[in-house]
Length: 397
Ligand code: A3P
Ligand code: MG
Ligand code: MG
Image (cartoon, rainbow, N blue to C red; front, side, top):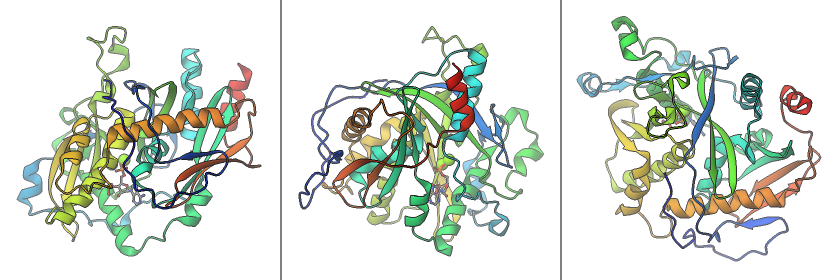
């Protein structure tokens, strides 16, 4: 699956031209062509359970199960139900890249092979960079460190916590609707292994966002090879067992990623303004899903009171076209997938070269200030953030 590359950079009106600081990358001037996205391939997966313990398996994988009739017959499903008993993960705990790195130790121990790749990170970080040319209002800081000839990138959580807006009661509730939708749209096993009771009672337990299923994929953009991990909301039908899979024949290979689904919620669309807001969101869904090779998104549309009214499927690869053709798009902010990928490719290539490779264990900060025109990199005296078990494992080799 290659990306059609065309000429041109992101269409950003770049206001006042600022003086480029040292170690900086202009956000709006990526004009490279040629490098293609490699088709992502899952190399392993892992799960966090309800107590946030890590398992090197698919135990937290969910399966899509929602009938349009269930939604309409009831006059809408109340997504606020159970809000008072929501089991919310403490997102002030800094997990760094731990889940991913411990999974790599497990994988490398089992297979006896080192995971290759230039950049190792969470998918969410690459989503931020991929959307950056079109999304310049929010700042962020990332930490990066070279170790064992690979560049590891994480979010700087203290920066995020210090700068994020305190969420009010309404946004807390709206965020709960997203998790509630995940709960009522999925079951823990394929439907033919579930009893009627298990299916019918799927919305009764308290909603929790502690358990998660994550896929680890190898992918690449231009010359940059990456290993990225990201949460997968559910599978559409089944996940092929890697043991049964013949992966040296592409015709026989049943790619697990092809079976994954991203779930989202959105307000029902009643005005042009709603449609335009939705398209902005849809582009982010594309960015997030495309990076991990997730082919389908299912969007649950809800009322302002949080009642699910209907849901709709979107094919990831069709989203850029939908957004581009839209009559709501504003010519200055129109998202362009090809340009966004050109920027990401330039950005990753730049990070690989601007952060000195010889200086392993030095932590660098990648900084984007809200509404600025540059991404900058600077040296810090922060202690390295890689999990000690990973460092020890790789040092022994
Ligand atoms: P919605 O996006 O459907 O509202 P994801 O879609 O990435 O799997 O995330 C699942 C849900 O987590 C989201 O559902 C939303 O409720 C919540 N969520 C994710 N990122 C968030 C953020 N930055 N702030 C608040 N809630 C967030
Ligand atoms: Mg998710
Ligand atoms: Mg989701």
